[in-house]
Length: 319
Image (cartoon, rainbow, N blue to C red):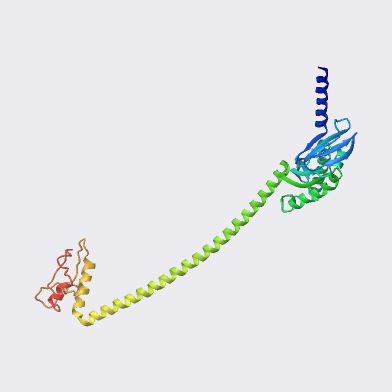
């Protein structure tokens, strides 16, 4: 029975010594091996490693081998003109020298990030302080991030940390500067709008003057054409009348008399007092009389336009 107990204890001791002498480093980690607090070895490659059993002699500290990120939020940074920005930024880093990282910061990320925060804040303030108000919102932003990274790298290298990149996430105006900027932009836009309105009114007046001139020219040309056409019409009318008169003067005289009757007597009734032998009544004679003899005496003619008025076709038939 005692032998079994001794054997079990020995077996447990062997198992403990075997497991305490082994440690595993995965692909995301690095191992720092220390003997009595002094660094004896560093393992950056993943795998299974061995050390002196128990933690009384050799101890192993595991540190990160991945890219790590540190953020700064809501920083109030002043530019060269005196205005302020509210900035969010971050940097990515990795532990490039585990031995130096252990010696300078006891291998603790918390201690290292305190140093990172101080240096990162100082670098951003320096970069923004060298720029004017508009530079931080322009294409210079990429250059500013590179400058901040280069300013931080030397100090972080002393801790065994490599700064991979610096990125500025947000650059916003403070409420006071935002209000001032809004008022300035508003005034600029109002001035630009007034200028555009003035130019529009000038262009409108110019176009209106051109349109008025063209309208006058068009109306004048139309009146000129109408007068020419009216004159040509009057000339053609006179030519037609002259031709008709030359062909049959008696019929032409009869037709003109009928037109005179129509215009003088009208359709509402008219009383005319004329001499019986007036030439106006030369076509009111008896049908058997020639048109050259005077008509019988008629003291007055009551307006009966249909009875005396004869159409131009009747004399033509009589002719």
